[in-house]
Length: 334
Image (tube, rainbow, N blue to C red; front, side, top):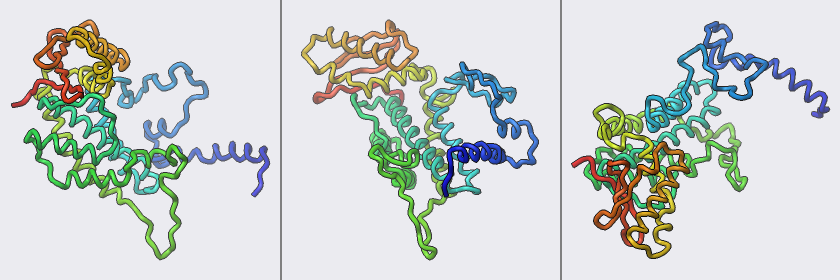
């Protein structure tokens, strides 16, 4: 079929009018509730270009604060992706093929965030060393192996093989982490080639209900641990320096920094190393927009390493072992 440019523009404008009924999803056209009307409508003709999305809605439950006002970052990210996943699954029955992409992305991302956060939480709680200079790992199987080892080394593991089998199964669906986010990879290769099957052959499918049950299992176990460590007034981190999310952000920033290279470049006196550590920490605070005053950071010589303090509170110790620098907190549990 051949089109002129004029015909394409005409049809395009006509389709915009004809397809407005699709905006009613997930509500029926007969639903006259205020929320259904608002979510089925288009923005007003004139848009405030300075802040098109930050005006308060009269439907107050839908005003979402940018940044954290009440809950900590870990809760909002993990709970957000988990709940978005559950809602995606719940609405997938009438178009499961298109819902598969966001569902698997949300499921995978939820597991990755949760494993990374709990590895950090348990390491802080037990005083387990972090190796500085680690690259960010997106492999769910690797993260689950690290998590299991951490729990077992500290006699904290209650997880059975089902937990790790589920993580491995989800990882196998998306081993590169981006198959369900992008059509092609960086080289232009299709992440998910389209397969045309014979009528006599069933296509490869993913059961979204079972996927939902899998993620429920992961959520139940990881949230229960998070609740003990950080999510209520009687959690382990309550009334400690690690209740502050920016302190955990500083720890995470140091662990993934190149501070080891800086400290290993040349031989320095103890005072010079302490000064270099303080300068590196100040840069991490500045570069990561952490609400911590760098002038409140103090670095002292401590045994075979260096004690980092925020005001009078002990944050962690930095020390060298076999050519690598490590970070370690004081254990919070016996």
